[in-house]
Image (tube, rainbow, N blue to C red; front, side, top):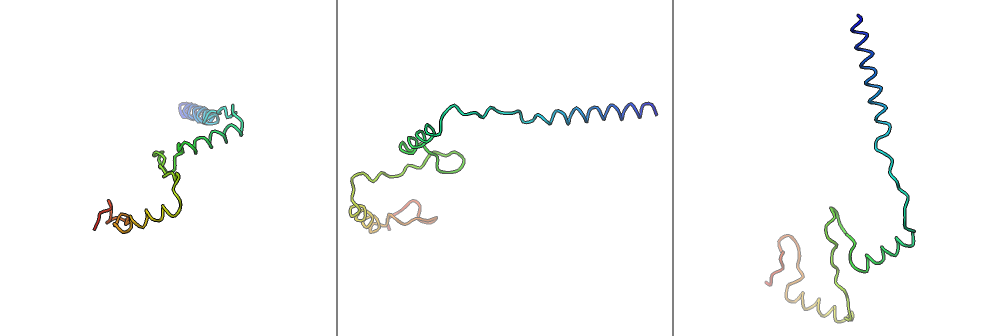
Length: 101
């Protein structure tokens, strides 16, 4: 009987110690910022301008979007019509990579 009581007291003390250890997990983090909201917005605008934002899952590299440059809308439409005429705009599982055909 004495060993049973000793075992119960010992196991109760381990349970109490385990629960006390869980109260401080995860440890508190210092979340105080060192930059202002305006600085963050400027950094975001600069990253957008440089094409450094990730636009997708898993942290893949950002998609490089074509820059319009000095082309007019009419020139872009002519290039699209020429690409369509050569069959270079078809896309899908069976059309990759685009082939003339």
